[in-house]
Image (tube, rainbow, N blue to C red; front, side, top):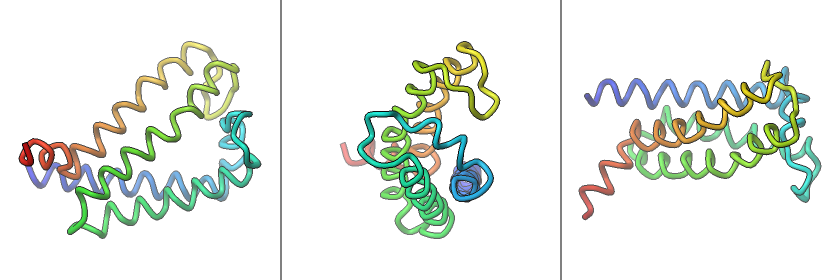
Length: 133
């Protein structure tokens, strides 16, 4: 089981790092379209900053094994923090990343909680909470 969790942790780290890289390069404009209008910073700044954060979190998932529980909570919190962008994309009917229908954008909303669960399970954060009780 630890091997599977470790594999899932590293896979999530690589995926986050890749997503962060695309924030800075090839998908920058698509990510800008997801930034809600109420965010008090420019969409470009938010995309660049979140890309850097994703790269750092991805590296932390892969390399900071000693702190994996803490990293898991931070990654889960990050996924919660960026969820308003997904909601904004759905509510405003913004086409990006191949999500060009309301149905596709709605279905995507249900994947964010799965990412939170993935981060908490793969890092042992859930297990650590249960042990602390």
